[in-house]
Length: 324
Image (cartoon, rainbow, N blue to C red):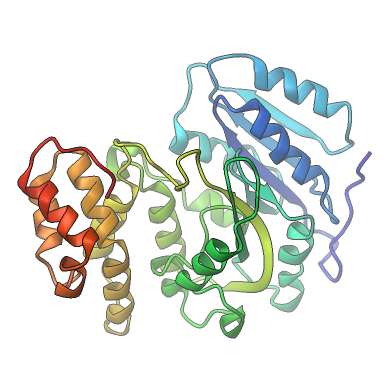
């Protein structure tokens, strides 16, 4: 059985809770929990919020509890809370001084807790820490070229390792990842996810941006700490109802930022414009799709590429449902 242990050089009074929201994926949840149990520095507790319709995840947790000394706090949400409220409930139930978020279909690297918690030994007043992500296929196979591209796109490269100079840039550039991060528990609870009625599926981005705007201190450790799983279609999300990128685009447009942040805003808008446009088309919002298509954030070089032509055709042909 795993015994809780202290990360090297981390203050003895620090405790770690790993929070896992889950929904109808007991097989993947088992992999996620086992990656927590396999930590070189085991967490002090694992807290699971289950929105599932059945009892399979509860049965799984009962079995895993018999295999570890790490306390596993499980709650079956009936009725389901939904992702945003489930996240807030997890943060409130976590007793650790530090919180790690892990999606139920993702995995922590064995060194994750130790490496992330060790950042507080370097900077005791740190707000949050994060590392690099490994992209894995739906069946768990690592995809090196996609992993490299992801980390390069989101500014998780060796030359940027260490304490980040601008907290707002950590959130706006999405350098702060969607999971596998570590935060002070007090900060996570003080920055609750907004309801879906306000942010749609853009809760992760909104949460990261608001964290950055708090002016806290964030540390990027140049190590792989999390495996991020693609869905069966080979993308992060393929739902025709997904609006995460569209919501992120709109939020980025409206953020009150200091003048020096404008280049970062422009980069974020240009990066998300094609996907945001595709999501607007999927949702039948052609007005927004056209506004993005004709904006400086979608320049001519993109409009003339095959993807840009495809999006123009979709603008001209209503009810044509293809990927962005």
